[in-house]
Each structure stands twice: as structure tokens, then as C-alpha cells.
Amino acid sequence: MSNKIELLAPAGNLEKLKMAFAYGADAVYGGTSTFSLRIRSGKEFDMESFKDGIDYAHNLNKKVYVTINGFPFNSQLKSYQNHIAKMRDLKPDALIVASPGVVKMARDIAPDIPIHLSTQANVMNEMDARVYYDMGVERIITAREISLKDCEAIKRAIPQLELEVFVHGSMCFAYSGRCLVSALQMGRVPNRGSCANDCRFPYDVYAHNPETNTTFKLEEESEVGTYIMNAKDMNLASHVDEIIKSGVIDSLKIEGRTKSQYYLSTVTKTYRKAINDSYAGIFDEAKYQKELATTQNRGFSDAYLVSKPYEKNSTQSLGFTIQDGTHQVAGIVNEDGLSWRCKDKTCLNDTVEIVLPVGAKIDEIDNEYGKIELIDDKYYLSLKKIISKSDKIFECIHSGDLNDIILPIKLPSYTVLRRDIAEAKSKKGLV
Image (cartoon, rainbow, N blue to C red):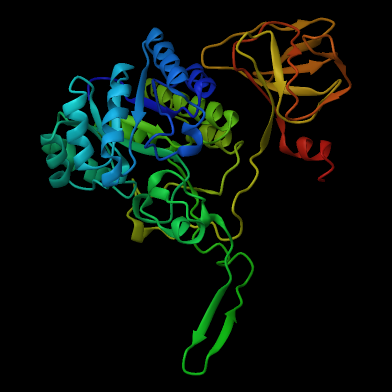
């Protein structure tokens, strides 16, 4: 692989798209709700804002890949054609599709736009990869169960075919996301973009004897199987160096279009650092894992890229559906850099850590609004005054408040303010 590996981040809306690029992404993926596998995030983009996002990316020499990876019914084929034509006119950098029929449709309607094959197509081997490559697919997002050795075999057989692998985020307990539990229980079809995440719930298990019509509840020991379908989150940060050195992967993909701004910024920046460090020969996996642990997660697993599924017995989260990370986001700096919005209760004289976008630098300062100082290679902001642009003064401001709070100095757009989780819980009276 002659070019540097791509870092691909999720974009659930226009603000998240901009944040992804600020924190180091080379490209993003997203789309409107139409025929996307993330209807909730897609609803945050309309055609106008999605066009704005593509234009914004291209001005930065970055890329946007459009998700059109649902599975159409016969009654929707005309709508699919119309949607692909609309997306073609926005000039994205690729269309992500999932079925052979839609691959052909996209080639016919948008012949000048590259086609990326969704992970939903479950490509695991060079034979299937060859079929799609011969149909005009330029990149395959491999099945999440694939191994790095199988990726190497595909690349040897088809050197021109780009390969993209997931490296971080939620994992489905079903094979490559082919799940119908949500459809059965909630009427929300996962493969049409409206999964209710039923696999994350705790379940009671029963044994029924039809001959005696007797039902027994199987009592489960605490943390030994209550969450019988709940998969840990994927985390391959420790293997980025190995993946890059294999020379066969073109793009590392982060899952999470519906996840928080804090998740997006932290995970993207961490993988950007891991990639850059790998090329510089200073790879330090402990550093990346410490930062990723600041985000909420279901426990971490290195999944299957470097280990076969049958070799793993640590991919299931038995005792909880999600756990707090080591830190909690307190606020996000607005795009203007002059103000911030609260994401967690913050009071006068509080001190929060400043997490900067990639490459950003700031100065230490002390004025009537607050103090910014550098301590142990980290910047901290102490608030002397909490006052909004409309001159409203606060002793404390709470999550969800839409007032824009003035900063003591202009900060880079989308800078994150965070605090230790113990402090965050203490402020809420949870400890």
C-alpha cells in the first residue's frame, strides 16, 4: 500500500461531520434517513445540510461516503433509483451499498461515483470479493468476522481492490449484523435501519416441558449470563500498528453515527494519534487505551480481525449493558470558538480539562472570565464567571441549557471540555 491508511469516522449530522474532521478523520460516512441503516442519525441530515457537509469536506480536501446500504423491497426500487440520482448530483466521493442489485443500479445511475460494498454483504473471501470487483465495486467493507489473514489473501488475489475494516465501536451479536430480534420484539427491522438494540437488554431464561406443561425459570448467577446477547465493544487500537504493517488495509472505520460528540471526538483523535505514531515508529498502545477508556462502553474486545471467533471467549458483556468511562463531557465549544454549551452540570469556580482538536494550540490566560493553564501537558479551564452572550449570569448551568456561555479566550471550534467521572457523579449527588 503506497498511500497512508485512511481514518474513516461516522457523521450523524453536519456538526458531527465537522467535528470528525477537526479531530483527525480523513473521510466520513453518513447519509439522510432514506435507505440508510441508521435512520435515527439520517434524520439529522436533510439533502441541503448533507450537501453542505460534502462541500465543507471537499474544501478541506476530505471525503464523504454516502450510506445507501438498506435492502429494498420491490415496491421501493423506483424510490431507490431516485435517491441514488439525487445523491449523485451532490458529488460525494463514494456510494456505500449492500446488495448486488443496488450495485448494478448505482453503476447505471452514477457511473462516475465509486461504489463501496457495505459490511452487510458479508464478504469473507477472495471468491466473493472477485464477484463484486468484477461488478465495478472499488472498495469492500469486509465482514466484521473476517481475519487479517483473509484480508491478506483477498489483497493478493485482487491488489487493486480497496479493503476497509471496522476498528472501533458497537458490535452486533448476530453474524455481520444480520439480526431479526428487534423486528420480532419491537417491529423495528435492523436491516432497514431501525434496530431497537434488543440484544443489549437483560433476559430471564425459562425451560418448558410440554408433556407436563411445567415451566421452570433458570436462575442465573449475577454477572454470569444475564445479558445473554450483549456483545462488548470492538477496540482494535492496540493492533493499529500490526494492521498498517500488513500493508493490505486501505481504511480504518469507526462505528457510531448515533453516538455522542464526545465519543466521536475522543475516538477519532485517538485513532489519528495511533496511526500517526505507527508511521513515526513510536507506537504506544497503553496511551491509546487509556484515552479510549474515557468514553462510555460495554467493555472492550479486540473482536475477530486478529483472532478467530472460536478462539475468543471474552466478547460478551455479561453483567451490564453499558458502563461509564473514566470521564464525562462537561461542554462543547461552539463553531465560533467564542462560547460553549453545557453538556453536564458546571458551576462557578469549577475546573475542566480542555481537549483540543488535532493540531490545535492555545495560550495560557487569566482574566475576569476564567483561567487557562497547562498542567502536566494538559490544559485546564477554571471558570471565574459563567455568563451567556445575552448577559445572563449563572451560578451553575445544567446539561441541555441552550445558552451560549462566553469563554475567557477564543478556542478552536468544537474543543471539548471534560471532567473526571467521579467528580461528575459527585456534582449530581450520585456518590
